[in-house]
Amino acid sequence: MGRNFYIILDTVLSVAGVVFLGWLFWRGLRRSNDPAALLFKCLFTVALVTGEVFFARGIVKSLHPAGPAANLIPALLLVGSIALCCICVGFIWAEHISAFLISPITNILDGGNIPIEPKPFYSIAISKRKRNRPLDAVVAIREQLAKFPNDFEGVSLLANIQAEDLHDLASAEMTLNHFCEWEKAPPKQVSAALTQLADWHLKFSRDAYSANLALQRIVDKYPDSEMAVVARQRIAHLEGTEQHLRAADERQPTAVPEGVRNVGLLESSAHLVPDEAAPSEEAAAYVKQLEQHPDDTEAREKLAVLYGTHFQRLDLATLELEQLIGSPGHPPRRVAHWLNLLADLQVRCGADYETVRATLERIVEAFPDFAVADLARSRLARLKLEFKALEKTADKTLGAYEQNIGLKSRRDYRG
Image (cartoon, rainbow, N blue to C red):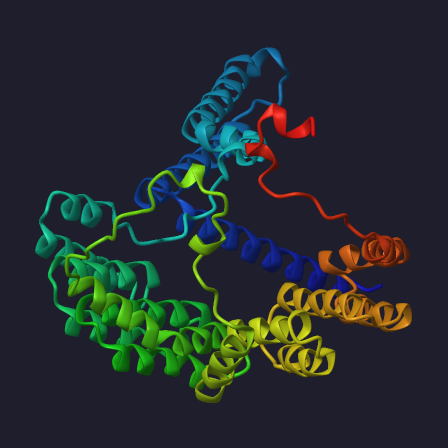
């Protein structure tokens, strides 16, 4: 290789070294707590080392060629100046050198120089709210929201103070609507905000219509989600909730009739048991509810149980439960619950072993990695025992026992 190659290589390496040192200097300057002090130390060190280099070169040039004895004093000056320069540089950079050597250990304990993630603090606002100073709390929250716009914790706290402390539901609704209209708002937070808004409409103004609109926004925005399922369920029961709240507001004194005296001495208390609604009436009520609110999962499940237990119509019960199982947005635990319920009704209504086993295997196939699958496997393992226990219960016949045996005296048993 020629001389030119080594010249080019030395130049490239020198430039790379200078660039690397410059990058280290710039990185350290940006991460320093006191950049001005660090810059002063660097300039002072460069000046000190440069002066020492020129001073050492001057002493070396002044050395006498006669021998060591003649150069003793210059040699002592050279060594002393170099030692003094090293001591000064060490004193200046001792803090940084020790931090560089020890930082790998201390960073494990305190996180090192990782910047703290900025986050809003609402402790001042909460404290002012507790001291019954809601307006001051609103000001403190808005100061944080100015730095962290659309922070859900702050938005929710602000709306709570407006609705519950200042009794300004319109402002609370505007606050939550502004957050819900944000394009990047997380779906769960939007659902929580709209659900809270619906609760306030019912609580403060007994307005089921406005609550319905708020919940319907969840259904429209996230139609096939679990949040939409919960919102539909609440919509189906809004009318009853409104009536219950209005009845609580308009509560009138109720006359309680006198109870039966000496109830323990009666021969029979069967006539005191209140009449239960006939299964046909209950079924009709559930059908009417489902005509108005097809997504009412609670009513549909109760109707399926009624079909299977009282009417022994497994076909109708299966239709209702299959509609629940096939509807989107339900979590695995709910779907598994309905499949287990269908298996229970199949066992009770006399379905064969293979039919029940196929129903339980649907849980395992649909949710193999969930806990409900393990429960279904456990039930499959003991399914035959479940059938045998049912057969033994059906074969047993109970004898007829005399009533009021606890009230007979000892003479009554002697004949």
